[in-house]
Length: 266
Image (cartoon, rainbow, N blue to C red):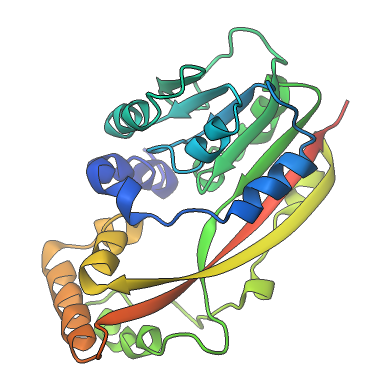
């Protein structure tokens, strides 16, 4: 029987139309550090795991890198092809990374995943990435998380009573992490025995959302997609009510990213 990870990772295909607009852009500094740490040169071939609609693909395609993308969802893959149509050296394949076979091993300078690495089978991901990389190539992955600086918007604490009411409250003792408290996977990467020279960089930024924009964002999260419709209606109506009471009608959400870059061991 499929586990929760396998079941949840297919849910994003149902929101393909809204995903690209609702999800945040990654900071430009992330791409600059990625290119530097992975020692990328113009023309180096990249492999992206779980490209979704191409949020992280486009900035690298704009920099002239040929990219092979693998996306599980058929609708997401179709959206990515549309969004990346201006880049003839970018190809999107629909399927799982676990089941994908490269035309030849060792042809990529970088294998990367943006907010997708955690969905890949842990028993497969490092070995398969290692096989796809050329000698001296790099693995990189990162993911977005909600972070809470000292000036975080109080609405996220206030709305927890509604999550509790609908049976979707935070389990156990929930820590609202600051950017510097986000965990990294450096030990896991090293423990694979397949990668070395692990670098970890953190990036934080803020986005202001109207009620419609924030609800559109929540509608792309797997845990909110898994809620029953009545629960979502109750939650979203309360978000609208509370933001309507604010002069600007907006909330502020702080994002954090932990970038990992590691070199293929020989």
